Structure formats: structure tokens, C-alpha cells
Amino acid sequence: MQVWGLTDPGMVRQQNQDCYDIVWFNEECLLAVVCDGMGGAKSGNIASRLAVDVFVEEVRRGMKPVFKEGEIPALLRGAAELANTAVYEQAQVNQDFSGMGTTLVGVFVYDSTATVINVGDSRLYFMDCSGIELVTTDHSLVELMVQRGELTREVAKVHPGKNLITRAIGTEAKVEADIFVRPLKKDDNLVLCTDGLSNVLADQEILFEVVHGVHKENCCRRLLDIAINRGAPDNVTVVLITV
Image 1: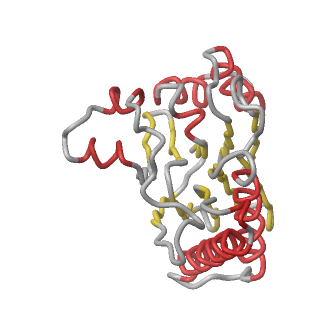
Image 2: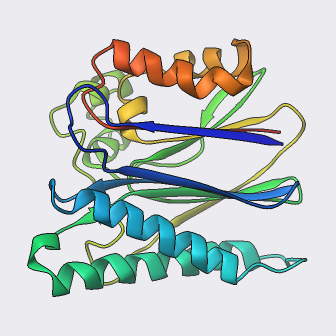
């Protein structure tokens, strides 16, 4: 298993409010998390960094040599809830941070299984030689409209409300995270990214670079460069895990 990650402020934003981390527990077990902060120039980066740090440390604290069924989803949910509390409480005590929040998408790979957690509209894709699958579901206004048949996915990418999310870390006292579990085999790939990538590149373009592009170690750079060449109106973060 190998993993790479990159983040960039993009071509419009001066500040990078995205944040990510990758933690190896052993050669077959790792944690990756990506957050996309919001709340203005004063606080978006604070929210994403705080959420990443608290989430990672709580998972690290709960690590054990062997997990029983159901323990990993519970561990990730608990870590997300603790991150939510940390961001929410910080926003309550500091007026500069009022209203801040962040998306969070993470994956814990253990025993050839990916356990995915998601809050907001940062994404995790699964890819192999047969195609690409969006594992997570965006918690966003446009996703609700797509599910109701009011928008196509193509139109959703350019809809003026595409950045309005319906669920986030730190904006409310409590948060509900989605959990997805996916078995992994050799040559499978996982991509975690913020909407700075998924709003600019089509899913098939991401698939091509990950599965058919040469030199996996350069894949994140290639994806980032494509977004930048298209104007990258938002911060861009991408993490690639290949089995």
C-alpha cells in the first residue's frame, strides 16, 4: 500500500483553508483525512486544522492491535464528534471564529478494508480498472436537488448554490457523520479530495489519471496541475491511496 497527498491554495484564493493528514500505524494500516474549512479569512483554516488534529489524535488514542466488528466505525464516529465539539466550542468563545466550520472526509484502512467517514461535500472515490465510484454522498444543497431530480450532476457542478453544504463539522453542537465500508484488493485505488478538485475535473478525468496515468507517485501533482490550468477558483487538496 502506498499513499501520497498534496494541497494548494489554487489560483484565486490567497489563503489555503484546506488541510489534510496521513498517518501510518503499520505497513497495512493507515488513516487519511481531508478537511475543507469555511467561515471567512479569519477562521476557515483554523477550523480545518483543528478538526484534522483532533480527529487524528482521537483515532490514534483508540488504536489497538486487533479490532472487533463494528469497533472501527465507532472509533471514527467518536473522533468526528470530538472534532465537531472542538471546532464548535472554539467558535463560541472567540468572536473572530463565529460561524466557522469544515468538511471532513476520512478513511481508515485495516485488514484489507476501507472504513470511510464523511461530513460535508469533500469526497472519497473508489477506482479500479473497471471504473470509478463515488463512495461518499455530498451533504449539499445541489446534491439534494440532484436526488429529487431537479438537477443533473453536470448542471450541479456549475449551479450557483454548489458551495452550500447542509452538514459540517463545528457549525452545530452535534453532528451526524456517514460511514461507508468497502473491501479492498490489490491495485484498488482511493482518492480523497476537496471540492476544489471535484468541481473542476470530471470523474472520468480523475479515473484516467489514477488508473491509466504513469507513475502513481506523480498522480496528485498531475490532478492538481489540471485544476490549476483550469483556473482553480478554490483551494485544491487530493490524497491518493493505492493498494
